[in-house]
Image 1 (cartoon, rainbow, N blue to C red):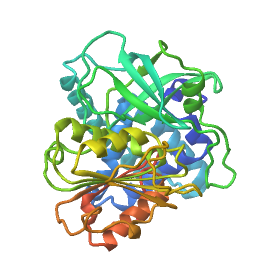
Image 2: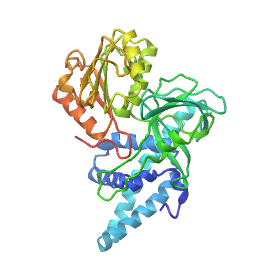
Image 3: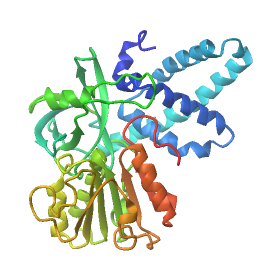
Image 4: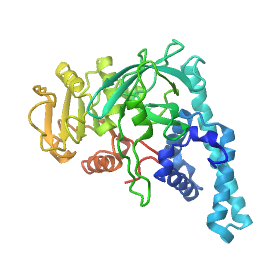
Length: 397
């Protein structure tokens, strides 16, 4: 398909092709659809996730025709004689039923984005890199300002944008999605990108390689360079009702998974929120942890906010904030990987508060562990919000 339609390389992540994540995600979506054909309401969360991702890439209805053609053709190659005319007809109908659901939802997202931006953001928009700020040994923040000088629309804290630029190493234009890492209502959009020196997949035979876009951004993109940016989208966010709630808020991040959580935290501080807030983060080393000083300053300045930092290194839990300074009074430093059994269930996790909300972002195993432990402690699954970077969503636990 990509050979016959190279223009689709702008949409399909080449790294996900190498890792086989994209075909596995598509196969999983088809299997889930077939399994719930009589109760499509079960698929609403998965559909919402897919539609936001598609919208951030400006997927158009006619592109579903291309994918459908090659998907049904691939079924013939895989199934052979088992794909009878009747089976092919049934799958054709099923594919277009699912496609219509996605197309209609994506069109609604596009219309909402137009209203939000006063009809000024209809497709990819040029943004200039205004600043590059090193946040840790491996994470850099990019401050992006629109070249047209027009006002930016707001977004829900936790959402992401797609960026699009040519990747010389691949010989094609590519798009990648990055969580916004600062509160809305600014003159810029900020993303904070981890440099991926060696991506790997657990799938046998998958290619190991550096992150093409992350390395390009870190090494080749300079202040003043222009990249294309999508309108903010994403189904992982703190809702307007949750933003103004006085109930406890717990954020649990692993590695660079702190980026959407940082947006939520900064937004709460900007609002002057007085609710109890617990920031829990796990990093491999102090040097790898982004926004250490920023979080410490927030904790020092807000008596309702506390933090717990896990560091999986020999130098962890040394009583400092990781920057050779004294840790805030409401910050706890612990050695090792995330272990929620070491965190106060009442004072840090608020498991006895029936309306507390939990936002978790990090590697898949990290999130599944956090979700499982919280549920074991009595937290309802519906109050635990998970965000996975990548294709396919969070596996069911």
